[in-house]
Amino acid sequence: MYAIIETGGRQYWVQPGTTLRVETLKHEPGKEFSLDALWAVGDAVEGAEPTISRKGKVVAEVVKNLRGPRLIVFKRRTKKAYKKMHGHRQNLTEIRIKTIAVGDKAA
Image (cartoon, rainbow, N blue to C red):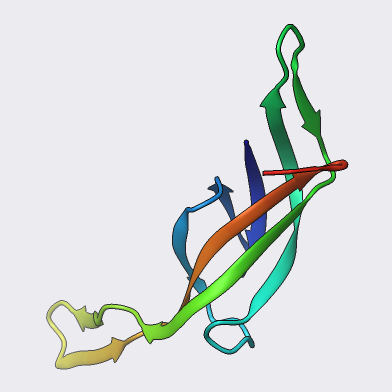
């Protein structure tokens, strides 16, 4: 069973048990929340095709809030006395996918 979710302007392919880092969410560590699935596929029942749905729910748990790696932005103009250095660290939230519900089924 897997699904495609969207959060923070990006899309992620997830399965139950997947841990991923997304842009900051306003949830406390240890709390569960749900996301709408853009596309979800259920398990195949014996002798039948897998259930495919454009509607589904994904339940996730916030593991922790953290900061990403340091990125250095350096700007320079050739033959000019112009140099500019700037650093950046993105705030991230690490989440773990608990369950995926396709229609009436949950994994």
